Image (cartoon, rainbow, N blue to C red; front, side, top):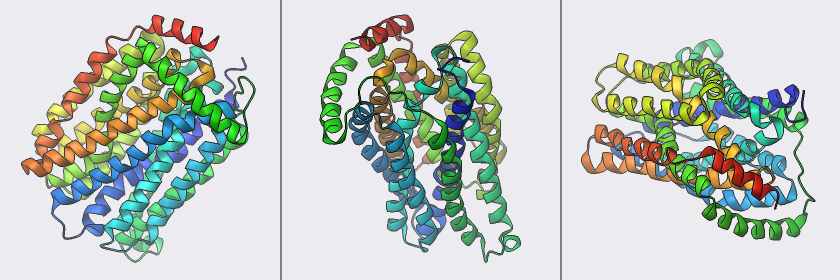
Amino acid sequence: MTPGYDKKQVIAWALYDWANSAFVTTVMAGFFPLFFKQYWSAGADVTVSTFRLGVANSLASIVVALLAPVLGAIADRGHTRKRFLLGFALLGMVMTGGLFGVGQGAWDTAIILYVLATVGFSGGNIFYDALLVTVADMSRRDMVSALGFALGYLGGGILFAWNVVMTLYPSFFGLASASEAVRVSFLSVALWWGLFSLPLFSWVKESNLGEPSTGWGAVRAGWTQLRATFQDVRQLRVVFLFLLGYWLYIDGVDTIVRMAIDYGMSLGLQAQDLIVALLVTQFVGFPAAIAFGKLGEKIGAKRGIFLGLGVYVGVTLWGFFLRQEWEFYALAIAIGLVQGGVQALSRSLYTRLIPENKATEFFGFYNMLGKFAAVIGPTLMGGVGVLTGNPRYAVFSILILFLGGAFFLSRVDIKEGQQMARRLANL
């Protein structure tokens, strides 16, 4: 067992995905858009509530995008990745739990808590992703990255399934109504997130490359390093092309995650069918993410990503013509087969293109572009829906993001990127 691949640390690291994916399933993709439209925005036109939700997602993304590179640089110089992760995770947990107390019609309060919770979730992932270089060596990163996403699908799916049962049979759990069950579900996410985060903070050891800076020294050193990395990214053609492609295609992935339930409701599909379809995605995604990790080791991460993007193009085209509930189920299965794979292989491929001693800072750029992309996607979908009055045109607009991302990814030369990363790490 090499120092770069310790089973205990790998499992502890991957369990954080199990922990915080409950936010993605129960809150972001599941109950929040549903509850927001039917409870907190009750009486509003469906296109108006879609626009509000899109703006909320975009606002959270802007905040994280602006903070990510700066915080990443400071964390690298101060060796404080775990501390920053803890701070953002606590923000996400507390704000998610706070949704329990938001009353009917209070859409503005719900938006504020949701934005802050999303900032906590997304901001924490900057430092969580960067810890991948400390728990797995280069040869195992595809598989370890995929393990994280796989456990995320399974853990998020298990809690979401429990929460769905609570909303279907609230009296069995001593709850007065389905609405109360949904509110309790938000509280359960906060508790689940906190409990299963403990192994990472207890067992994962942070890699300390170089002498750490402390206090304001870390801030000043972080800013200096950030300016240098801006220059590095501009000069690293391979990293720049990858980030540009990732910026586009991950926008499509994230937008589908965040807006799929809202889109189905806008077409008049039943809420129960949409929730079950989301559960299907989670449990299909668990073995599929593991399979993609193995696929990445055999055919390469880049080819694996292309395969996933091809499926997304087909899903988008089919979504435009969707008419019946069974089609939504079919699309949910297709998304489940590739969603975790695209995310996992993108993360592991990126670790091969960057210097390890600047991992958090470079992942700051990675997450910054991902979040700026998520500014475009939900707002684009909401705006097109409002302008045309037809949600089908909104979902069709996502197609260009997958095609554009695939184009720039095709220009990425992995060997050249690895050579440049090694050279920078030794400077």
